[in-house]
Amino acid sequence: MSTLGSADAGLQRQSVVLRKIWTGIEDWMNCRPGLTFALLSLLYFFAVFMLSSTKLLWLDEMITLHIANLGSVAAIWRALAEGADPNPPITYIMVLCGRGLLGDHELVYRLPAALGYWIGLLSLYLYLKRILPPVWALAGTVLSMTMAAFDYSYESRSYGIFYGLTMLAFFCWTRAARFGQGSGVRYLWLIGMVIALAAGVSTNYFAVLAILPIAAGELALTMHRAKQTQDSLEKRLTGGTAIVRSINSPVWLGLAVAASPLLAYRPLIARSIALFAPHAWNKVSLDQACDSYTEMVEIVLYPILALFAIGILVHFLSRRVEPQYGTSRQSPLPRRLSAFIARVPCRIELPIHEAVGVFFLMLYPFLGYALASMRGGMLSPRFVIPVCFGFAIAGTLVAFRLFGNLRYAGVVFLCFVLAWFISRESVIGYWYRQQRQCFYNLLDRLPEAEQAAPQGAPIVIPDPLLALTFEHYAPPQVAARVVFPVDFPAIRYFRGDDSPEENLWAGRNSLYQMRIVPLALLQSSASDYLIIAGDGNWLLKDLTIHHFPTTHLNIDTRTTDIGGFTPLARGTPAFYTASGDRDVNRASALGMLSVPFRALDNLPDGVSFGPDGGHE
Image 1 (cartoon, rainbow, N blue to C red):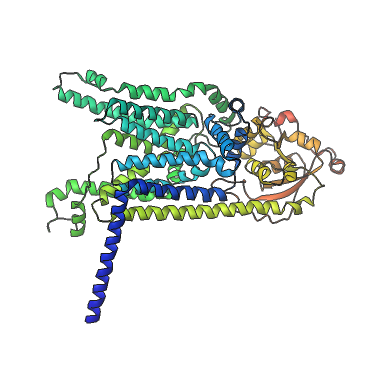
Image 2: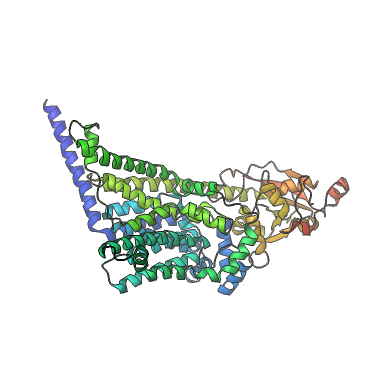
């Protein structure tokens, strides 16, 4: 008995120590909100640095880099006007300025996205801290980092930038809509909202969607003020008059001003739609909108939805069952569940207009679907990544409402999402490392493949995902031999889209050193050449149909994992050899069997590719 008593006493002492530790952590974080966010920022930038140093630049980032390399705002504008990329100019200007200040490094190219994403984290934390205790606000901020939107914090594109600016604009609007502060302070917040929205629109046209959650919330606020005005004046005002008096004109004017940069970008938008929409890989569909939830909010979507379901159930039980039975023995619920429900809800000071705004953030993919259906014709999950803010806010608020009265719940929630974030990014880092190794495996086996072709033969890479990255990282003497061929009708016929080829074709004379030529010119100017492409690539099929044989080289490239979230190639790259029209032996052997290519047929407006494989 004495042994059992000693063991119980030891367990009690350990329990007391653990409770003190949990309480101390929670108290420390609640008393030092600024320092805790600073520590989270250190973790964020460390993760960004490690992942960026592992991840190779891929096609989209290479396009950003080449446009920024033009060296001036005027040159960047001209390139975008020619269709080099379907985005406004600010991202490229930021990368240009970063290179000028900090030098030529991959992390520098990605720094604008990293800073933009961090601005979103700061805005989210400040917003949640105004509603919840700091430990819960920090947990909600980390919750947003567990989603796939984090992958754009170290990608040299516009997504991480307008993602952060969306949350900044929303936060500024919530502060501008608050009562009890001077008009000067409110106008400062309003100016911040306008600048954030306008800057977002200047990085990505889809950032105009950030206006809609604010507009919906402002409309809800107007209706609420109108009702209060009517009640306070004992309905002496008609409904219409009360609504007019309740409209906050500066906010609506600010939203209009924020959208005004789109007027300057109208020529760029029209050119982008004309080039990319007809054969885009990301055609508008409801499937794209629905996939945005699973691809951007990712797996953490399901625990959040489970929280929503539990919250609805507890709300229903607390409203319908417990008022009749309480926690007495007559309650139809188990005693433990009755006791839990009795401690819920934990009050949340969330105004109705902010709740409407958060709800519209959660609807972001469907707002994007509506916009793209009306104008643009293209939609992909990364266009609507601010949906992650909606689910991070709503998930945190529901979790606090359910468990906020339980001891240590905030610290437990924080530890859970931190563990999720660290685990996820560790896996992502491993994938990028594997992808990097696969790419260099391909480079290492190139000398073996070159033995099957004449010395100095062209290296033909018809895969746009691989071509620019290969040229960038390959030795200069190898990069100088890279050729990117195009046959637009064949590409559309065999693959169904031509968006990246349109990017590269538009910049063939101004952006890229790599030779970008119609397939007919390659065939007419080459004898034997080397091809690097995945099995089933359009070029292999196109050559076969035109009776130009290709030979697969039996070389194990060990590049199975070269794809991924931001793929470096379509399929698993392999080496092939082929012959052009200058190969006299091939020409005499085939006689008239081969069907010659015509350069005019290979262009974007070339004749269509028929079911028999020929150009009609």
